Image (cartoon, rainbow, N blue to C red):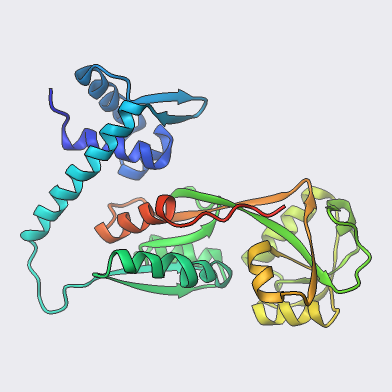
Length: 297
């Protein structure tokens, strides 16, 4: 029996999300319905498509082959649909992305240029916001379709994991601190921090509380350039992503890992509504085609 288009979409979603739960959220169906559809396809084809592993799933060799063919079929169906779409004037699709200034470096330097080379018909518009709360509002109110964010985010959003990135301590030159550094040494450490009440500051304070430490704020500011000058001027240390720090500071500051390493997942988020073709293509590019940064040690 030939698989239905819905079954093919469900299987591709499982391949992208590597979990039944994530796939069900991505295609807006109940988890039980998606599982039954994939199991029915396995029965009809007489092969196992998925190998279950804990909470996730992997594709079997047969499953990987079916997914490759399914992507071709679904792309062809979308191309046929596009023939009947009226075109008025500008035929370029518009995709609005939102993110923080820190993660915007990834979008501006890596993800967006590579994506637009592969999809020249998509006009990508990048908007930056300091507040994660504002980013969530932009998504839920429909002013943006996708966001590149630190995970986890609001449970009302659908997320697609990309990679983990290392969070490190950046200190003025000559700081007498070990490398790697124990979290307990943050207690009483002079630090450059975001302003109180912001989302980023709230997250850091929650982490400090969990660790039982109380750093001493010596500079409270939200501008990234002020963070850099605050550290290089000797005002205090800063917690930030290693790859961003290396670009921002060069050799002007000391970079230390934490022990154990502090890793933060990063991914794509969107509201629980059907996505445009451009948005789906960008998620596939970000998850599977873009170069992966391995966490530095």
